[in-house]
Image (cartoon, rainbow, N blue to C red; front, top):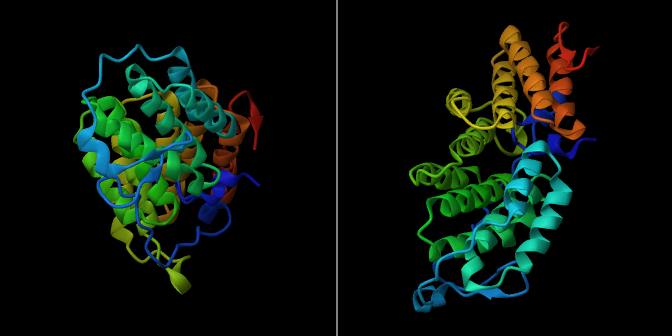
Length: 290
């Protein structure tokens, strides 16, 4: 089974099979402003109490080309390899001139890890946040907060994830479309109940909020992010019993994924959504009908 279907990116398991289960107890976010030290994810620990004592950072080295390449591969769905390679590379970047690259790689590692085993994203997202506190860099901070918020959502603390994502938008970094996508996921997650009601829509207004966020994500960004937005819009339309809209969005998602070189793992999802929505005219890009 495509494990991406068990993650509430668009609550796709619910569309193809049944809604994702919700955790009934709160999950605390890693404390980066006080309390115990957290694992930095590279063999050391980040002691939040020491942040004020850290010296000013020197000018940062240019990002290694692997940073952009790994982020693109994350968007394409090469999750396991990206998580492993980003972790390995960030562990080698220990100089004060490499904090920016270390932070970006920590965020990418966390985002990729969250697609398979969400708990594995905790340490790397905490490391990204700690690095971000040392840098006056909107790009680093925004991506770090998106990564950490994604971890929170995936361990069923969508309200905390939503709050962090809303704050991340205010940073004005370049990851606006990704920010909106994860914010949409937080709203979509909260549309469902908990316990015995985890397969029921209990907050329909959250579907409207999710739709609004997915539409905002379409305004810019990589074609793969636009594909994810259409995939999410298909999910919302499905839950609202809007079959025509669901089928339209799922076809657009498939076409954009193909254009952006998405993995078969990613492209499996639109096909499953189309099957669940009984989209008779759905066609795999390349001419293979479903």
